[in-house]
Length: 374
Image 1 (cartoon, rainbow, N blue to C red):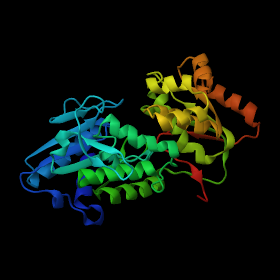
Image 2: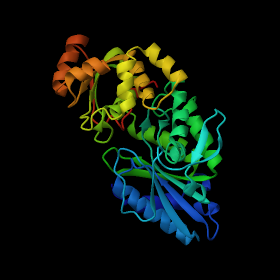
Image 3: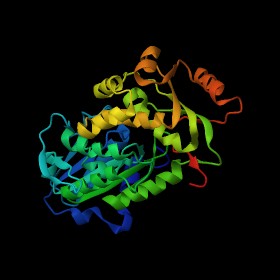
Image 4: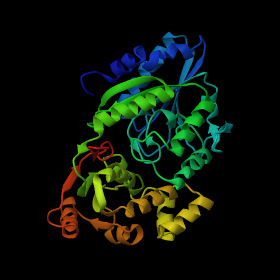
């Protein structure tokens, strides 16, 4: 975890919040507190963070603290005390209002009763919000499938660039949802790209989010002098578990690829496709126009990733290196399969030319290569 422990980084962040926004300003003696944790944070890191924040809240007079973690594909800590797993499909939720874009905001009732709310997130590129972290505290972290679907339906208007925090309806809608939930203190981890934590920021929700985006860009955006013909990108161990999540990594490198170049996505996909709607829509809507019409009239979660894939195809060729059956990948998802990355590179060179410039991105889930002039 680097030279400092996660607990030390969290404590330092709480002692030195952005803009002087102290956690104690939200706390009244005897209050109930809720810590919302994004399970994409490495398990040991979020254990240390929760312990440090819980200790700080207790010292400030908080009577009890609950920990809320959304059910998702990554592992969560069943041994953590006062842990509540949130399932957007099964939990009961309470509607607390609607955003300016009309999204009904359904919040977990146990979290709603907490006078003090703290979001513990990890900053990394995201195909829907531009960056993960603070505003995910309500949607998707602690809300219903209805709220999440309405928020994600805004993507039918277009997908943001990675790390973009402006002109993004999905992100703006998430901020609106957080405002309805009341003040949420933001503790955000910035990864070092090697499995550890480089920095922790704390303070007011939006201020920390925007500072995280700026710092992340400095840490993980490689500057390039020219666009590449071929980019080999690894989806990483977590997002690379299934095709549904791996596809999103391609967006992170598109800014460095020339028009109609080739992306070679390396993703083991040991858990297969990963989403039944994603698979269903790939079979039913091979044309982007038909898919777009369907999603505008009858939006379903999962279909938005199909739309993303169609947008990617309009910009580049895609090869996939995975354990998935080759015929299946070719016929259902319209990608060229390869068994190894070297085989895929040789195929791409035959298409793009012997003088092709190639970039290899071993941590595509974290890295955003961009042009020097950007």
